[in-house]
Length: 181
Image 1 (cartoon, helix red, strand yellow):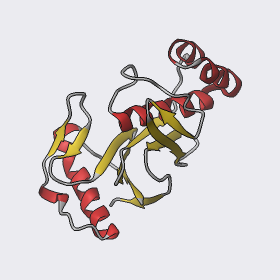
Image 2 (cartoon, rainbow, N blue to C red; image 1 turned 90 degrees about the horizontal axis):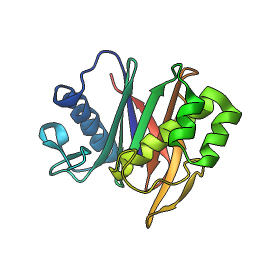
Image 3 (tube, helix red, strand yellow; image 1 turned 135 degrees about the horizontal axis):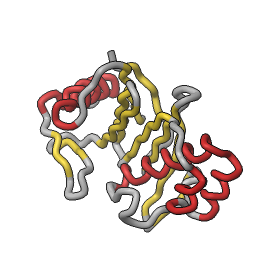
């Protein structure tokens, strides 16, 4: 089961914010009946910057936007992205960076469509660790598929009218949303 923890409040990013990751991971392990204690586990980054626990077999992905911080835990590679929808030249950006069908979707669905595509792209890239301009990118409007020999599936998490949130996983799509206090 995938667990997504959400925290609404002040948080720090980078090394200073790792205590929230460990807190959420410890809660996930306890609730899932996993015999790991990630509270003191070292968090390291691979060569492209994707964070992971050095000695705990638990996949995770972080995101934050505005005052919200979120973390997803899974037993399979996963990626999570959250974006506060803000004004931008979304059609120009879509034409430049999105696949043709995705750019058409943005023209048809406006700003909301742009951010739906954007969070899916970010979630996919966080799952693979490639970054937006790294490896092969699937059409993110397809809910599941196989890209470069790796299966993936997207899910969306309803946050608010002003925010979009999506995750991508190579495992199951089911998730539980939990509040981290």
